[in-house]
Image 1: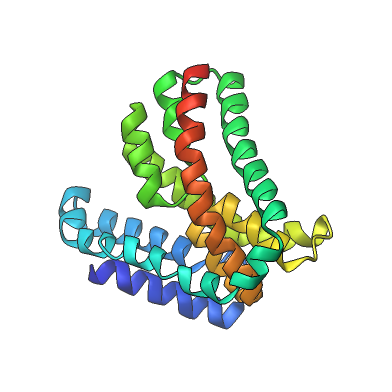
Image 2: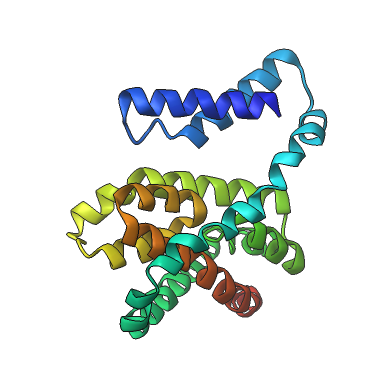
Length: 218
């Protein structure tokens, strides 16, 4: 647990000092933990046995994202149709891209369903992967990697495609890169953070339904 916390704190300080997207605190923490375990010869099972208690905080931390969402409730009511369309498009794009790329690269059914929940929060994605017969550990890695990449490029993508509406930014970031991306959305503004929080919950539920359908396509 100490290794995990120390790695993240190191990443946070580096990000604060240099403020470059590549210096994502979670990415630095992952690399730090890998280097320490390899150098000291610590097995993953030993590390996970003590660090697993951090995982227990994942669900309540995700639930806490409902606070900024509640603060923007009036905005949600005014734009519910646009929000529903945006989140539906986001989930469909995520599932379709996994299907097309899996078919292109000739992945097995097991590998395919492992990647289907890549764009939703870990707490939900692990359950979907296990239910569909995927490899849960790889699913977790794919989810984390998706979130890290999403948080790193989110602002740049919005700039390139001239996406300036805060609601559109938040929904896109949350639907594509779940909780990790939401931390970036919160840096952009309150509305972006609230919309991204909403996207986490709704996209997770829609993916539960959509993944069961897409799983039968390959």
